[in-house]
Image (cartoon, rainbow, N blue to C red; front, side, top):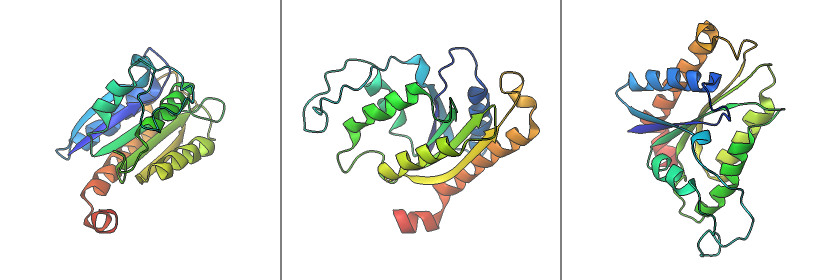
Length: 191
């Protein structure tokens, strides 16, 4: 089994989300599950133009790194997103990536019934809108949202790994994602 972590921060330097994702992935690895991680900011993603060629059987005219991201992420058994909250929503780079996902919506699409987890972090405690937006994404792709957690971290630019509550929560996200992957009940219900 494999879990792919997707860091949605727009910060080129280290971000709080990057550190928290690493903690969650280390917890997942402790269950002998392979992990990998990508940072969307490390790729070139162009804006979707809404030409609909990708959904009508044609080729997307945009030549960027979207396919490279999908080639790494889609084969994983589960996806673990970590996202900051910018002005009550997820970052624009993630919005761009989601818009480009129209390309893979034809059934049976590769995200159908894929397990997903989410860590949303912000400098304040209001993460509800971003968590809700991800919920819509997961429902749109018929993904199985195993776990989601929102963290309000006032010292988000400082030392996130010193926040024992945040570390415990993201480790729990890792554990719950593993449970979702190994759950016979989930496999029985969702296949």
